[in-house]
Image (cartoon, rainbow, N blue to C red):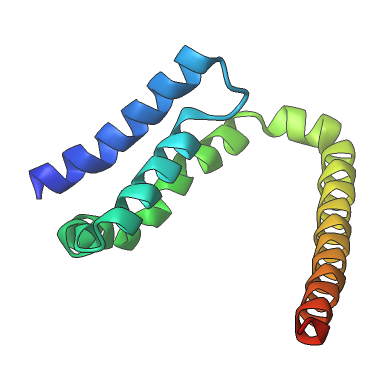
Length: 123
């Protein structure tokens, strides 16, 4: 179990190192996750090795939201002052994200249909 946790944390550390070395505008844990995903593609048995640790982490995932909730409670004054602007920003950004996702899906769907049609008509 310690080795599995070390692998997870090592992936995150490797991601941080890559980001700092290359100066990428992406969080290190995201790169670490991509590296871990690559490892899982190369060695699928690693998933069984990580499963006990990941199960414990997922069962206790709600604990990770406690610091955010405490931060909100600590800054209720700011929330009261800027609450409407925050709500508006969250609403607009959610709508924009959903619209962009839908447009990307439609565009990729059309592209896939065109490619599929071109492949079927080719001899």
